[in-house]
Image (tube, rainbow over all chains, first blue to last red):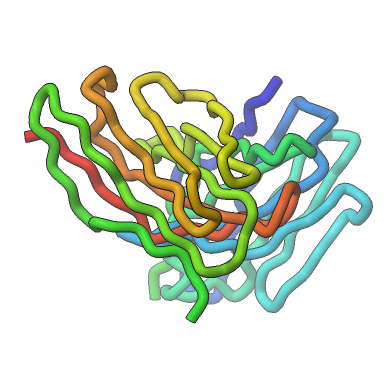
Length: 111
Length: 112
């Protein structure tokens, strides 16, 4: 019940295309859903986050869509660029201060 | 600049040896965390601390120990009891509960 399932494991997208990464959870107590971006040899950096009181949050080219009834949330990267090539992690937490991470998606954007 | 500093970037351990990974933050954050990252497994929580002189076990605490004597420092010791220590170790901090966690750039530990 504490797992966060992330898919796909890897994703290849053409420059200018849309990248979509999906996550699903079981624990209905989760109330905070961040996405992290990680480049090789670096720590993850917070990209965007959402709480369940909204169904969508957009920051620039990055959008989180949240479906509370389906217990799913997804990251959409519009107009994907080669510089977006990285590993993306979804995560979830309740008020226990512990983040549960998905297994990551390696995104490659080709010119 | 405010941030989280992990050192060293690379660390090698001999069999039967304890090693300590450093994590320092100057963000004035109350909470600090240690994660282990293995290929294909995401990040798993080792230990976390919400306040000085207090810490809790995460999901994979066996073979690890921590201390939190100062607000800005949260060192992790990988003991000889940890049989598979080769991994990328990440330290994070947050202002308090349920706030965004910010990560350092990690320490890669390998076995000689």
